[in-house]
Image (tube, rainbow, N blue to C red; front, side):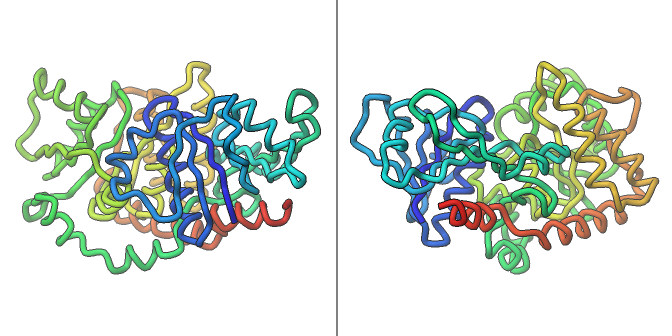
Length: 357
């Protein structure tokens, strides 16, 4: 199959991260992919080796009539296609399958709207259907991005060797935690909680590193908390980081999904929205994720998650008590098994496009 994926980089690079993973997974299935973006700079460290079968191209100008649309066109996260490209889509004898790939959500509307058409009533696309495709956590959605060889790669991964190769050396009895976050007022409280047990905190570059460095200039922490600042990691090495840690703090959409495949205890910082729409979205995930958790773990996790996202009591503990950590890890493993029983997003997307083509 041949795909055009359109992606605008809004902020924080989550959009290009998701689109690159999707492009790689499509290309791994022998599909041909063109990734159109207005800012490909992050791919220099996110995917320094590129990938066979993917052509990264600059966002096309409306007047650029040199490129014919492929048979499947993905408009990622409502980025709005160039008018000239839409005109060429409409001019094809068989118009492409036009898919709006939505943001991941555990809310009920994801199931209600998944797979629905949106016939275009005006403009150059008049008469063309655009289809809504929702990633999600149930069989009524498009599922999550999961490469065909992911489980095999995880099973053969050697965390000790990877840490050694990256000069990460936890001390005996020290837990490893990774930190990837937006600006977060709860971060001082997290560092204080982590320092209550021997912890090596691996701090990713960007927002996380800037905040931690600022806090280290104004606060003093117990010697039981050690910090190590990491360089920008490729997507492959970021996965390895998650697999090699005992606890992961993730943000947005891409790292959130990868933390669930890692099946390690995690806390998610959802992308904050000015209108407060992130609050019900977070609580919807809590309902799904915790539906089979013990009452004590569910309560502790939800309260800590709300505080981590600025939505809960600032005096609440961010992490479940130490005696619940084994239960927390087992719950994450069971949750991954539930998700693995569902079709992965790329397979569902290909089947969806084939059916409509």
